[in-house]
Image 1 (tube, rainbow, N blue to C red):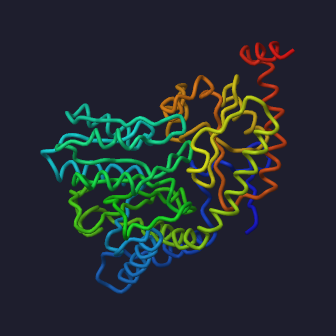
Image 2: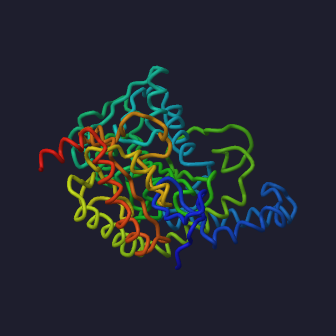
Length: 402
C-alpha cells in the first residue's frame, strides 16, 4: 500500500499525522459508495425492487460492522450520523429507560462528546461522578467500585483515549459495573479498527464508533446495543433502524462504513505491527534527538498509532504552526476542542505540568510510511530548538546549562 501525498494550501506535500482527528477515505470505500449517489439511489424503505436492492446493501454493511466488533448478531448494530450521536443515544437513551436512576459515572479524560453531555445533564438535575486518572492516564478500579450506587443508571468509559491513546481495561471495568447490574457504555471511537474488539463475550452493553476514524466518510457512525439492553429511542419518527433511530438512512456512507470495517479487519494485524513500529520509531527518534521531551501516557497500554509528546518550555501550538508551514499535519489534542486556549483537560487530569501547552499528538495510519517518519524526525528538532531559543522559559534553561 503506497503513501498518498496530499497537496497543501501552499503547494507543499502534506505528511498527515493527525489520524485521530480524521482519516482519508480508503479508495475501496469510495469506490463502493459511488454508485449509490446517482445510479442505485432508491430509498431502502421502498417496496419496489429498485429500493429493496439498496436495503440488501445496508444489511451487508450491518453484517460487516458486526463482524469487526465481534457482535453476536448484526441486529445489535444501528447506524447513526457520528460518534457524538451514538454517545448521546447511549447515555440519554439509558437515562430515559431508567427514569428513577439519576446518577452517571464517567472519567475526567473522556471526549467532549461524553463530558459535555454529562455536564449538560447535571444542569438538568442528574448527579455526575468523574473518575480520576494517574500520571500514566490509567484508572483506579477501586475508585470506580466505590462510586457505584443503587441509583447509578450508566457508567460511560472510553475504550481508548483520543489524545494519549491510553487503553483502559474495559473488561475489568465491565465486570465491576455488571456486578451492580448497571448499564455499561463504551465510547470506542478511537479504538475500533486499531485494536481487536470482541463483543460476543464482552461485558459492554453499548458501544459507539465513528466512520471517519477508520477510513470511512464523515457523517456516519454506529451504536452497538447488546440484545436485551433497555434503551429508549433517540430520534423518534419512522421505523428505520428497528425503530431505534428514525430517519432515512445515509445509504452511501453506511455502505462506506461497512466496507471500511471489512478493510479494518483485514488490516488489524498491520495496525499492531507496521503502524506500531512506525510510531515507536518516531517516539524513540524524538526522545534521542531532543532533551526535555516526554511521552505522555502508559508506556505499553496505548493504541499502536498514537503518540502524545510534551516538548518542555514551548507551546505546542507554535510547533504545530511551524510544522504546518512545511506540510506536516499533527495536533495538540482533540479536534473537537481546537481553538481553546486552555491546556488539555486530559493532560491536566494526568497531572502533566505547564508543559501541557507544549504537547503534540502524532497519530499515524496504515497509509503512513517510514519516509514520513524520517521526514518528521528531520524537521521537528530544529523547530523545537528555535522555539526554545525565543521562549523565556527556554532561555532560562539554556543559561543554566552554560
